[in-house]
Length: 229
Image (cartoon, rainbow, N blue to C red):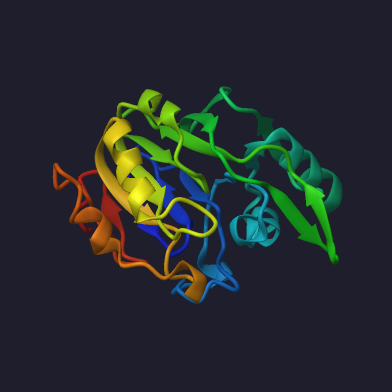
């Protein structure tokens, strides 16, 4: 698996079979992202929830790449009806199987709405995802607070956890989550995009008791062992 973090919660993934996926493609308006929307080439888009800084450039990418959107059913219904996108809706606890492997939706404690033409629309529950391509299993927590059932997540190879605070877990709660989640490596995301999310990711990974954290460089691909390519 090849992974590239584009800042905020946006992660590009190439599975072991070469299927290209992007999670929460917030490109335009993301001051930390080093690429343009035209640089993104994917087969699928996976959304954790409906907030505009996670849906991001889904509409443009989906139409140009003919990439189906995978997400919570209310969010997918809205995108299909409003923008005529091809979608694959699911719900918490549900698993989808395809040429990408499988995607399972997990609980996340967060809100979910999408602002379109000045009006906010409810987008169902927020979610985390577990992507399994048969060789590597990745947990992307989406936007979430800490919750005790994180103990039932895993085992996974990589866990992407938000640390930005204010809207999600901060470092203190991310450390508590890391004690529960069964993951080989923890990767902080959703920080430093805006001033309200200012955090030092090394304050997080340096406190992990097993020293199993990794802070990727934005835009630099790495593999499941967190080795740059």
